[in-house]
Length: 513
Image 1: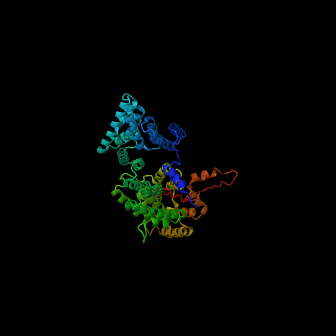
Image 2 (image 1 turned 135 degrees about the horizontal axis):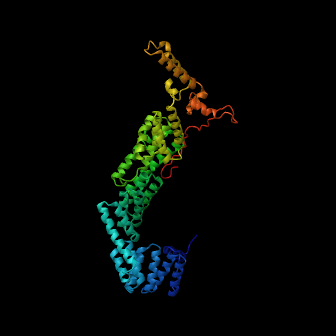
Image 3 (image 1 turned 90 degrees about the vertical axis):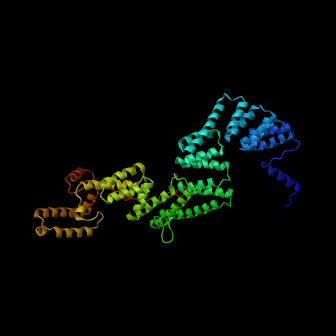
């Protein structure tokens, strides 16, 4: 299909204007101004600018029209064009108050304090609150810069806050406040200021590298980290530092996705290998630790920024080894998890389980109370706490397992074998030969027989495991309280929840769910 030259020319004229508007050359000036005002009233300032342009080209000395175009430019964020229009207005009419006030605000936004104050003074506003607020903002900017040099980060941020309320497009102020936020350990706030820095100066590379590195590694937000480094490549596709960081983060994301899959499928051995490494790789923990150190050396990650991605992996390694009952391997990672996060769920559960295994039941309960405080929804912690309380109660009574010298999970064959060995060893007939009195030997044998009687009977053993000693008169009395009830027989019913269930709810920072 062929298009006429005239039609193509008309289309390109409208397209290049950007607003699909074509204004006839014979349109009256008054109609141009009316149309511009109508578009402003309808919320279409870009269209209004087109009509104001046409009107100003017809009458370049009409300061009112130029001022109105400047106001339209302001509404679409074209501050430079707006400032030029206000300058032109004041050349034509030096005492025009509207232009003086608008130009004062623009000067203040970029922290040109003295020029902004001069315009207010020329407009007769020296005694107003606006003038006093502008003076206060100017002084606050000076104090913020001074505090930054002195390392007074709190004052730096508070004074910069006051100044930026007026000077929100002042690049040095944003950079100063970002620095002071990072020095206070306020990473999110510092990153927010860096985002404003890039809005004002999109050609800068360092803020992109800093933001992406801290989002990805420090906050563990891989989605935002990658999105930020893509912005750098959109601005400068040939940037070597941004390309390098982008490739590195993409590679790590693929590994993290594999880890997510392994954990979700409860393949803890595979997950552990991904995190700690094997014969083919150094592992995510070592890789990310090295990346963070390199980024800190390059000032892309602040020394006070958190280390969430690394911490996440350490906790998950602790958890994976615990699930595989590999307590010795879990130890270093669980200990480090508690060093990184004092109330780490994985670390505290390891600490509690270790205390239980060492018969330090009160220590286990104290640790599990911390878990309850900081992780109230943990089902595993609730189960462990019940177990610890039962074991503590039993430790203050007789311990039949200890009498027979067996573990709590011993099977029937192990129980019987231990009993027979102890009977042979401590039989009263052998007491004299062993240098033990007959009374002591009989007492020892009575304890052995009592322990075997309970542990060899599955019903009695279950009662004992639940904190009810069948040979304790008080326990017997509590059991008799149920006699005569509708269920009859004084039987005790135990409704036990299953063991701790692994939910697989591993949350990867930055979008891995």
